[in-house]
Image 1 (cartoon, rainbow, N blue to C red):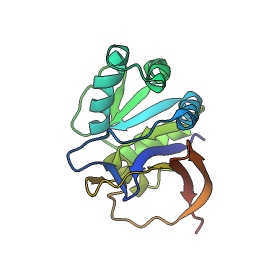
Image 2: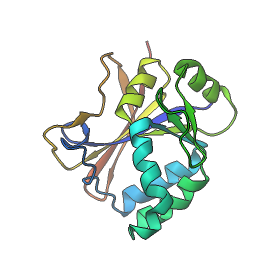
Image 3: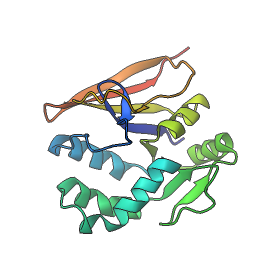
Length: 187
């Protein structure tokens, strides 16, 4: 059975984006970049909420014309070839080869997890992450905490349900960011 991994960058004070929606603060050094690229190479599909999808779809298809960052240039071909799924109740089509799910989110994601193959990676998406976690469909959370206090914005975990987790790994990248890996606690 495939697992659903929620991968997210957050500030020290627990926000996924700043007060004005800014996402210019993650420190993507060489160690974090290598880990991130390795993770994305091992999954069979990317899942996005609608808002994150709109950002990704506006950036990655043309990244070579707007960025020379080594991580961006290395990730672009991975993004292009990896199947993409958008979680949305408002979109009918997403473009860039992505398919849209969300009419029966629990059944659709459970069916994807039951298929053979590699893991599914939900990138960012606080709303989609909360919805999928609330349905018990997230198997692992990989949270990268960056050395910044944003003072407000969108919380990483906006859900109202408690989830007891157990730490399964941690790692410091580039002397700056910390990866925390969690799974649901038993019982």
